[in-house]
Image 1 (cartoon, rainbow, N blue to C red):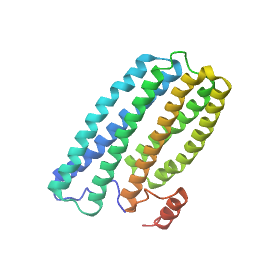
Image 2: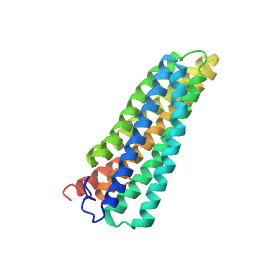
Image 3: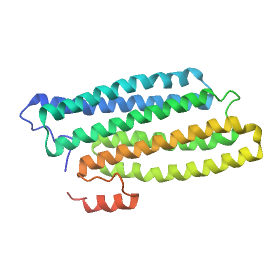
Image 4: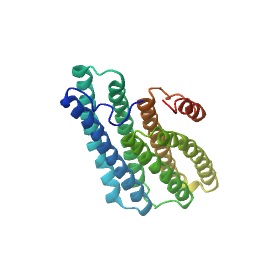
Length: 241
């Protein structure tokens, strides 16, 4: 099993430092994502355009971090030619970085759509956005915590929670479509809420991906296309490894 200190025994202290750095930078990037999501959702709920603008601006910083981390991971693979658990660490981080960058894109879309709600937040969509945003924010936070702690069980809980987000998303879509049919004058505003909900659901998908990359890192097994039940069975099988 890979553990948090699994690379501590390298002869090259510089190699240890490089591996520590990419993990630290991943956590820093994750922190930016969490703040970006918080700003976007809070800005949406209270109609604060400054918070929404902060969320949009944050995307540039996130893109820069993604490029730098990608370069670092490529550099490590090319120069160090890592084997076994070290290679898994670099690959898992590289994949997680890509998902974090896509989260940033979706959160930027949430902020942009929120700015278009010129008539205020439609009552019909408020409860759904609030509930789904809370679920998604917890998924993102727990996925990053799982990565920091090498906690495959927590990562599984994140992946499991994505089903709840998907169900809430489907329920919200049905409610909003019904609302638009009954009150056609709300269509324009409701469509912005639909785009916001879609982006939130995708942020949840990317949080699930990050959790799955951590499971790959810790257990050495790819669960990217596994159902929650299959992931549970796989983790149970590897519990004592």
